[in-house]
Length: 351
Image 1: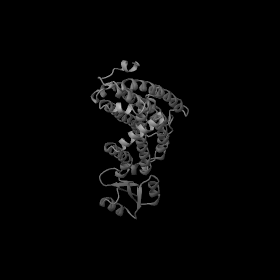
Image 2: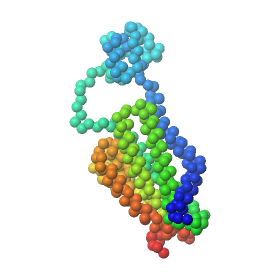
Image 3: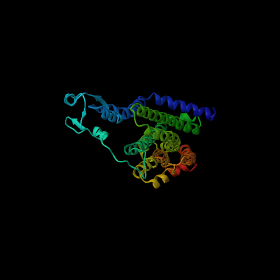
Image 4: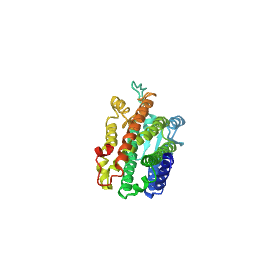
């Protein structure tokens, strides 16, 4: 059997086992529902546009332009009756005066108020709330996906080693094919799950009527996040397999995988803590293990030039090639060592 054929066989086996896992399927469905619900439900529960009864056509036109649900009535008495009965949230009568039951309707007052023109010397098209939520979502998705799927890679390798199944596997397929097939399968599954979540979130935003300016800013960031995630996950996946091979028992995985966990956790917290610092984010967007998060965030906020993600992605590709080589060496030299936990120095030496 050729290495390519063996790799395909291992990859197909890993994917088949995973998609039959009820926990994986349940978590995927749950995350999809959460992604859609997080974008659609707020618009469903906000009660829709404020209902306003209006006396006078000119005022009605102003309120309609502000996006309010306007109902024209003939006189003030009718307007007041509609407010008291709860058929409308507020009423605007001659004066103009605003009638409300027990709370000042801010959107109605704002629509009737005349604000002076404002010139922004340093304009920012990104809504402040979205400026926090979108970077956090990108960081959290990368952090959780790489951590959860990475741990699964390490645990799978250790389980095969602990049960001696790996000895049967390596007698049939090359060790390198076993590694590549496992990494490729988990990368495909992680990428597929993430792509589904992001697509569901964007569709949910469109369905919920989110501002098109925000959607236009999110889509390029998501478009770049996917390839950054793909390459970044591959760069870490081989290391996860390597630390799984270092462990003799599944109880050892937490200890052997600590360095890889730090490669994920440190960039996550650093990016979130300095995301308002443009200089720091620029540096982080070129550091391989923080680039998958920092660069899409800079693209979302409009701080990155069009050529920057290309350079950062090339640097990440070079890093992925290096980590694959390092991970493969540690994996091959420690996979068949079953007499206890293997040290990193021992695994690195070709003995």
